[in-house]
Length: 600
Image (cartoon, rainbow, N blue to C red; front, side, top):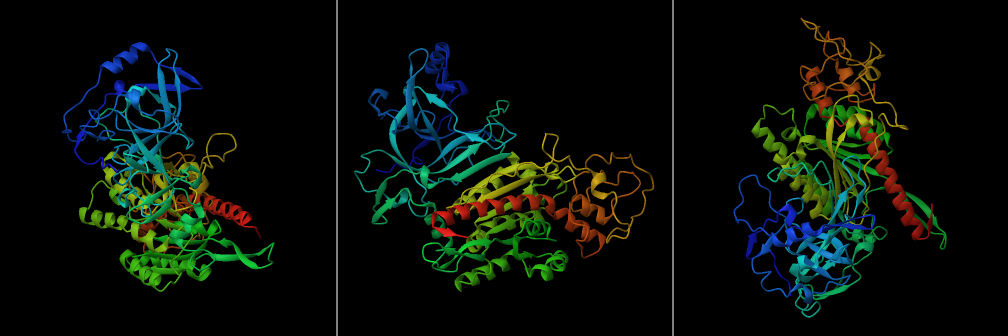
């Protein structure tokens, strides 16, 4: 029997000290009896109405759930069983034990429903997410937090099905044949979410900050080895299928049809001597490409540029001038809706022209930028609409890996609805996704520029890690960049290097061994000027601070050129990012090739 937990609900808020938690660190379990008694005696239920600005609690709970449950002594609390906890979270029990006071506890994988305020998941009934934590805010190493609970906190048994099947292929709406799990309510878990370390300074009414996070689709080895029978589908469904099968269902069979859109390299099958596809020169598509900062970095990283589109006529002229003759890239001046229409038509005809291995998505970010101090709401609405087009771009281009760069302000609680929408667009298609606010000076960009960087991997693919910083003060890293290293020594005859008019009144000199201010579409504002304090930067100096090569040329007048530069992803960062992603795909494909008995 399937239970829809979204029906007959009331909001329940459990205070921080209500939860009976046994913290285990290095095998030691610590909890005081005073704390235990205080927690058992104190349970707070609050009004169903939440004041404005207060985030939703962890769960929505059935009002009658506790009254109809057997006492804890009748529950199955053995390893391998599943329970719902009093606070609305769930637990796949992996171990049991007793603490220093001989009090029992249960411990295992903790799961939250998709409605939990900490998550950025699509709100789907009977769907749970396995929760992990990053160790700290400085790196992306995650761990399964060792949290134990008193058996008294278990409300009822349930059945949680861990699967690497996509939601479209099996979910609660498909119905499970009666009797498989008795009368237990059934839930599905196909995702694990890694959250930042708990912020003990965050007040209860403050929004949850998502400066870093990861939502990863379960891999085959993490799924239950079970087969369920679906009444709706009228067939058996395996909860665990090969990861390669997941990818084939999304992108198409690799060897039976030419559906990948990669530039292929061939090798010899050692057993048959047949020539077979074994490796690819990975293809790249650049959405909202602008002048081409991202494509510049992708080309440096060894990717094959396949197409780029943008509706800005001047920017596309710049893009064509720098890439079309050199690479043969299809540079398209068109609105995203026109691009999607062309991609949909190609898909119907089984034309591979828009299929790519890696895609970059840089929709306009002004609505989320701190520099957007005088917002144009009409323009902001159009830019936000461009963000929603990511859903269709993924559907028609089916990249193995997607990247996205946005203003760091998108993670602010006031924009959390848009961050949730962004993440949900990836998750709805089965993409694993990670994001982090990155300080670009740690990748050699000589300016104070923080950006939200997103990396997503398609169904069946492993999720690549974030690139480790290349510049810094730690041993083994290159020195931090500087204004001087970027612009001093420029040839005075360099293109777009005409000196602007000097200031009427000199401004305070800037340390050239430090960083420039953030380069924006308008140049950077009153605080971004030449270190001498005598003038603004030239167009070429702006380009250097954005790490464009000296021979990269820009079309348009100086104002249009500066806008193109400010809108661009710094090529130096893009080259480092796509270099790692290329290596990641190569290693994954070589490993897959060896398992298939192929030799390059």
